[in-house]
Image (cartoon, rainbow, N blue to C red; front, side):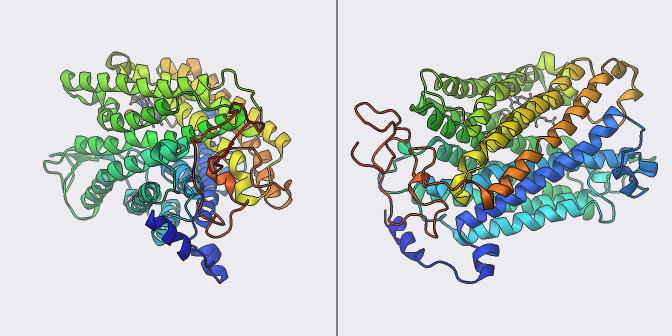
Length: 580
Ligand code: HEM
Ligand SMILES: [Cu+2]
């Protein structure tokens, strides 16, 4: 592999100068950590917006304590948030969490730092492109956030931005601009991951010897590369509808506040829905495949046995990826599509759940006969299995047209996808932080604080999201500013209080994590190269790895998870070790 060795030579020289080393770095590890810090801050910001919304939902019409006084009277007169502000919080919460929180954390942070190490590469294939990806993400994200203080305020049309609402609501123009920047950043990253994985693998690292996490990133990159361009194009068209008088999405004779919309003429609101969901369904797998990969790595290292069904898991991920492009209209069953079409999407949706269940079954089966180490990352990885299971299974009634007609746009949907992305993805990503922290910083996080964080987080997350299933089945709609305005919601209003109280509890239980994270960077127990006695290549270089990662290019001699091999005194053989 010529490219590989040439790249090692290029990287012998470490960058000089503080700015080149830490700010405009082209080193995948520095960029990974930049992504890590930034995306976690965005997650916290998105969480904060949600805490404000949860106050209004539990105690509609009552002033928000403390923060209510600080907000401008146009947003919250006398501390009570307006409906418009509620909508802006909702739209920005969803957008920030998905596009600025989880994707950059799962791909930008974990992918960037861990993937090159796991395939034995000295860096990414295109280091400058990598730097550019981060330096588009940060300004794009800040632009998105700054819309709160720009004229017109933040977008108010949900993270889905359906027209015609999105064409007439204020704030949307900045949202569209920021989205175009963020999508471009993701595309640059996706190309880089793809080329790196295919071209930069160490000698002996055949595709079937790649760790599951690398496969997950590879499939994710393909999804990003194929799904994001349609949304980017769609966003440009919506932008034109707002600023250039075009009418791609505006129907004829649209009347707004009693006046005929000036640009209305033959546009199709449904076109946006198709383009949006063509991205957004594959996107849910972008959110969930990397955490699945992380969980697989952690389970192998903490059960001390090879993963059950490595190839099934990989083929499962590939089939989920392929299938994710033919299920998108299950989000649109009630948009008036023909029953022939809706039956098609019903069937594909049922089919896509098969590989997902296969992956989960393999992971659960991997526990059988293992000598399990209940470390903090392993606790998070274990919790991922049933929690993601609830998320996935509650998707089935949404994929069946008969039940979705009732459940669509209720709190049941909110419960469903939050189980997938919060108790699933975020729990999986947390597991990854505890697992790879020693590699990143050369020190371990505290186990006792980790356990407090784990149990508090798991219980309060369920407290936030489980009541939503009940509310949804009782008929409570999503995107409500004041649930008590409709009589039928009153029967479940107490559940909104439970959910809100759990959300504040969830905030409280992040304190041990935040303290542990920063404290351990400086004062944590020192960690050796391979603290978990794991087999994959990232553990075969120093912690943290130097510039260029490996002292000499590693060679791979075996499958990724050679744990408890027969006739060997150690219970693991790393991938780069030739003889047992
Ligand atoms: C695997 C990770 C998954 C994620 C991240 C996810 C995420 C989401 C999101 C964000 C929505 C809300 C869309 C909206 O704003 O209306 C949603 C709705 C939906 N999900 Fe999932 N989902 C996942 C898995 C599944 C599975 C496994 C199924 C079915 C087999 C499924 C079926 C649906 C359907 C049909 C809807 C539309 C419901 C409606 O609009 O009434 N999802 N999902
Ligand atoms: Cu979908």
